[in-house]
Length: 285
Figure (spheres, rainbow, N blue to C red):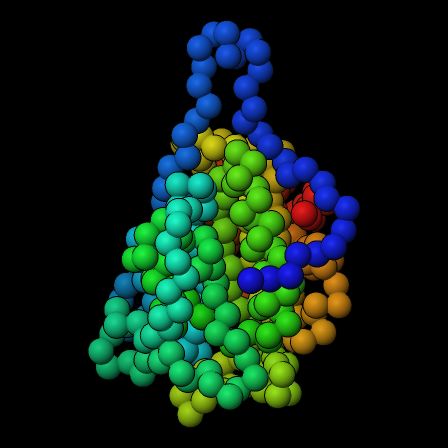
């Protein structure tokens, strides 16, 4: 659980409050649903071909990802978040190898980060999938983990995760994509390029893109040039916690320029050009 940033609280942006006129006309608030985890596009063109081992598409009920067999981590993980995914399931903590990987590939196990000085850092968070024990357990597959500096994972990154959940509690739904970048991060035992005998690559940065919409349907078509998009780019270090997560905001265009991925590709190119060039300046708590 992350430590909450101690700053003056601002109300989250809420987009779906009904006006009196709407209530009188019989309109109802939209009901949150579980939607397509990759509705906004496949950023790297990942496929299910085993010959595409470093951009291997894995589709689960709880999230979708591109896995990199050389790095032994994901390239990115994409998921939808609304209150429909939230329930009372306990944190399962059952870190384990992902049996869905091709049988001939070396699999990262639940203890392979032990003693490394890096956390098993979730991309799709445990707390975003509490609707059932099955949903929560799926977030503990090691394909959903990266070696993450403890003060990044437990403080700055966790605060951003917590903020995302305040947004859905305020009547929004989110489309989130996150992943690692580069090689060489600094954990509690110092700086490493890889960990374990399996040569798991330690990223130098972690990034996340969050598209915020009022709860509704036909989500891609509802994205406009004024839709809030939060993009962050954080060093994978222990000193990252010296700043609140909002300090690390950037543009989607910047993350695309570093990763080579094409985010939000299912959104119209005209709208993409606008929202991907903006740095978010909205509330952070």
